[in-house]
Image 1: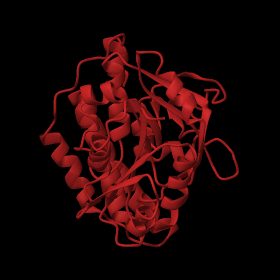
Image 2: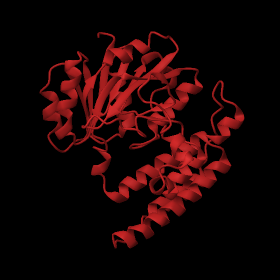
Image 3: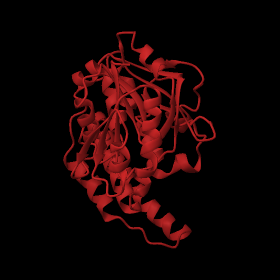
Length: 317
């Protein structure tokens, strides 16, 4: 697969990086590993494997910037972006075959848990609407996952057993065409350090006239949450809220952005109250409110609607 290479971003990934790279080697796919200032034995694990190029960052540059580094370090026509907690990769050639259609800019396969159960709700999602993000922020989707808004957002109405066009596959197992990647400038590094960079990229792909494909003939085992679960609870919430607001500022109208900033503040308050009631801990995070207030002051203009998407549909998104 000389026209294909993989990019894996690591951060304290000593436990999971080995199986991930071994799976790529078994598929005959060379890898570029971009390490974001790991303090464990990650570098020792990845440097000990043949066919792996290592880029070691002195500081944690965030996921988007590290992926951009990795893609820039290879000249392969197709690049497989893979999380370090993804292993047992099969069917890479199936994904590569999707790019025989010159209009395909990205393709993804099925992610499963260790038991083989599909990771429904994560493998494929539709672009988040304002309603979906409101439900996320207020905890509605967690308390009532079967609601119609969440079913649509998380593609719970989609048959993951058949190949199909997709909106937003998970960035944990995503193959991209270099031509499309370069044309869009890669991941937006404003999404820092993590979250929503893959959603933004897929939306820009679709707006640029590219197709995004899903094919379950390619699959991999995904542990999930490897890096983000290591974050302190306060930092994890801050990064998630911050990236969500960044996405809203970039792609939604000003009114929708103001609404979501308000929902961030209400949602953060509800989470604080819930923490006090269920865990008897006061988990107040004032920085979240600062993010929401700043987002009201520094709105960016929304992007133009995607080709083939009406203004009404764009407004719902």
